[in-house]
Image (cartoon, rainbow, N blue to C red; front, side, top):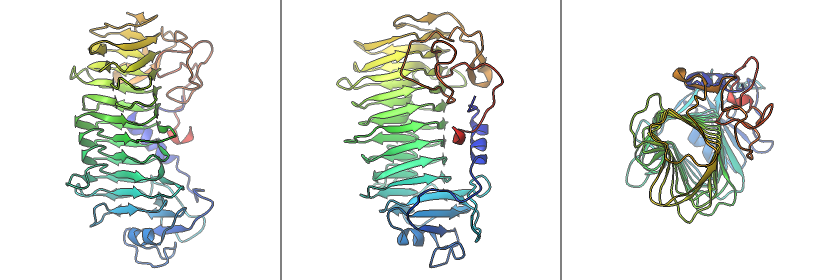
Length: 427
């Protein structure tokens, strides 16, 4: 396998994979070097400046390299980006070339001290900025003006977020860690979201894009212990999104994923679990939008959810090749349903009202070690080669799908032989 789903080990391995060399982030643009105590004026390796000074000097296409250490501020938000400037953490502070970028050894932290939003992005530039190798923690969007995106609020501009950690950020409404309102390109990959919270709408991420032409991508991330007083850990509203190969664990909200979007949403290859069956009203996935396009839920593994799938207000959903294991209720429907699907596996659930077409029931999927949250399939699992043909080419780990025959059911495509776990960054 290419990824182990142990939450802690996966992140450690991910950081180990950062190159210890000068990154090729952008061929064009100026390289600007900043440090927590920077007092330079030219923002060079030899004389790094403060992050605020560096941002003041930066233009579209430039890159800020953050020296190891913790960055705090007195403004709210701490950093406001009006240019498409990339932010790269993990610089070792060296004055030689090539310089070293290694976030594991040279951790870069932006800390809002629970009272300040960390980054606000508002740029009309066509450039797409990159943010990588940074820990965003203790961001707070809780006052009467800044209420969205405790760590990052994307008002306008395209952004790719990769290999970052979001920890203990909070917002009073919409996106405890990240809120996306921009219609430009948005991707978040290979990141950890730990213990973020919101009052309303998306303890970790809230995406509410009104007129985006491209599909937002949330892929290869880990979401653990995020919460929402009302809403979900991840909320997808008014946007077309692909949510693929993420691990979602022990989130405290009415749903792990809430879809309120009329646009196309694909939820594929994810593992969504709780260590034990807790609140019977917690759903793995909730969908409601009667006039919207079909929400596709394909090849996911859902474990110990109060409700695996909840369909409200008659949205169009299709469920294919999913495993529902140990849930109180596998599929819950309010009123008339517009639900279709096939080749799902149901085991150990208390209520299985909607089995849909060609189900597998009363057969243990035979996970490698469910007690240790290892939801890969054993070689004699009834889920192997039992799935319907779908438009997927890989699985949760990035392994080819299908392998040696038909499509498997669940997030894992069984692979024979010795398993080598590699970090996400190598996928």
